[in-house]
Every structure is written in C-alpha cells, then in structure tokens.
Length: 464
Image (tube, rainbow, N blue to C red; front, top):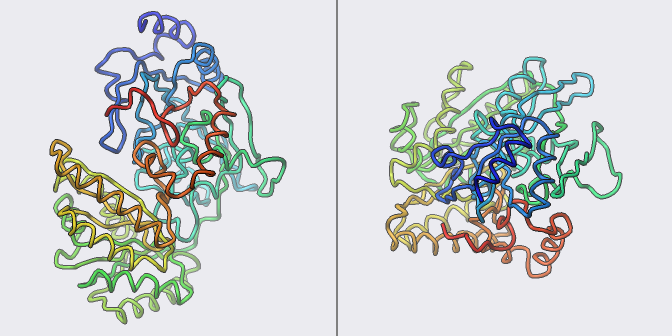
C-alpha cells in the first residue's frame, strides 16, 4: 500500500517531494516533547497549488494529514498519528512582500520567524512575536499554535499580528481570510478561528502580518534575588507602577544552574531567581523606566542589578534565556515542558504551588517563563524509562493544571493543546465547550483527516 501511495504522490507532486525511506521519515516523527510517531510518508509541497492538490487527493481517499513546520512545538501538535502523512511546509519559504506604508508583511508558511524579524528590521519595522525557537520555527507553525514569547507582555502574541491567511481547507479548496486592513469585521472571524487551531481545520500556506515601527531604543536589565517569592512579588510591583517592559522573564535556581553549565553567561549561581527584562521605546523614557525598575527591584529584595551596556551584552543575556530548553536535559533526559498561565497578580501564588507540587512528588521542576504576563513554564525533569517517575510526573501535571485553573488561569498560554494537554481540556472549557468545538471540527473536517487526534478526539494508534 505504501509503494502505491508513493507512486501516486510522486506523479502528483514530483518524486523529489516525497520522502519514503524510514531513516528519513524518522526525522519527522517527533517535536519538542517526548511523544513520537513515525509517519507513513512525508511530502514537501513547493507552493499552495501543490498543497491543495495533495489535500484534495487525501480527502478523496481519507488519508490523515499532519501539517508541520520546523517541529519545535511543545504539545505534540505535529507528531504524526494514525499512520498519517506529514505535510512539511518548509519549502514555502518566501517573504513575498514588506510594505512600509501599510506596515505589513506577506509571507509563506515556511518562512523562519527570525528571518522575518531581520527582514522587517532592515526597513525599520518590527514584528514583535518572538517564541524562544524563533531562530528555527516557522510562521505557519507560529500561527497554527498562536505562539507567544517574551515580548507578549507588552506586544501580545501571534494572533494580535495576523491580518489575513491563505488556508487550504480539508477538501482541497483554498480560501483567503481577513485581508490587509487593520479593521475588518466582514462575517465570522475565520482568521482568528484558524489561528491557534493546530492544523486541525486546514493548512495555512500564507499569512498577512501586521508590523510596527521599530522602537527607538532598548535596554536590558537583570536583577538577582536570594528569595524566589521576592522575585515574583517584584514582578507585580513593577507592573503596578505602570511600567510595562517589552519582556519580563523569570528563571529559578534550577534553571540558572543548568544554563550556566550549558553556556557560561555570567548568571549568579547562588541566586534563588533572576528577572531578565527589556525596556523599549523613546530613549529618554527608557532611561527613566530603567531607574524606576532598579529601585523597585531593590525595594523587593534584589541583591544585584546588572544593566547591559551594549547590544552584544544584551544579546548574550537573551541567548542564555533561549538556551534554557536544551540546558535542562542535563538534569534528566526527558523534559516535560508546561505553560500553565495565570493572571499576573497570581504569579507569586502559582510559583509557591509549583514548589509544593515538586516537593510532594519528589520531582525536579525548573520554573522559568514569561512571568510578566503570567505565562510560567514549569519543566518537569524526568527519565521516561523510569515508570515510577513518569507516574509521579503525570500526577504532578494534573496538579499543575488544577492549580492554574483554581487561580483563574488556563491550561496553555502559548504551547497549545496538541496531544499532551488533550486529556485536561474539558476541565477548562466544560462539556458544552467541548461539544461546540467538536461540532466546529466536524463542520470543517467531516472526514477527520486534518491532524487527527490533536486537541479533540482520540486515535486508535495513539500508543506512544
């Protein structure tokens, strides 16, 4: 059956766009989680027309499709299930247009996020969404997951910059949602519906993205604390003063030690926590805010305040933050990355709950994340080959979500539901919410071929 499908798809797309060797398919069997699933085949269409032809072919034969960008997701969203065919969008990698007057970009789904950052900045424009994986993650994946990042505090997340989308529907038809205007209330907001739908309602092939003027000045500041709760309290104090940093990140002691071992960045190894912040805007305003932030941090127990005095020093500090994920596997080989999110006023309470959960289940849990907008990333460090430890981790995950919901929060701020959070979704949205989302899925994708088993429903072959 696979040989027949290979021949059919080679005729449809070209032999060079079909990957069938098991060694090559293994490269598409995982994402940033511990979930795996070897795809039946991998195809790499080169344009929207080929994506549409592929989807129409799959629809007629009821072949499951799994859209995939760079595979950096943290909820299992691009892991293939049900012997699915992975549709890699990385060949759709053109920045089609950068419009300085309308301040927008038109990009294909496979454009790397960091490449868009550079292209926009070259013409003094600014694309704010900046997931930690921006050096490799793609715009299509960012839109499908509604990715966030450190700058979400001040600037919002991916959905706040998506003006329009080109989408291949599950039957192969192509639609364009939204457009090039800031205001658009024509009909149902399909752009928002597709954004964050994790490839379950269609395949995104192109996006129209809003850009902003590049901020005049940016300043990076790092404050270290001997008490984690004091650092959390300083966060709410800064925001209460009316200061909204471009980014406000927290890293606990476990995270600090792992990062310093992974790459020396001069982080204080004896600190219980650090806050890493960016302030941006007019130069005079940034200077005033810098002084006020330093005063607030000291008032709440900061031991040292470090101000980056060059672009290079600022980049070094942020590279240390972006190195957290690879650094944490030094403790244990399996990293379960969560992103339970609470109202920012509840960040101190959530951090206390996380420490209690770690102690109760005898687990190493590294705490870091976008604390300024309440989006914490507790990472549970385990060895998946140890069944007893994995069982404790599963119990801890359930308690983390219960704590977030009890504090008025949500299961996911930016990672999505995918596979890992699917069992907990009903706790947040309720039975009626689950039914409504199921009906939407059935209306868009009546044959259930689009990224089956993600967010809603189950797959018989979901055994990993």
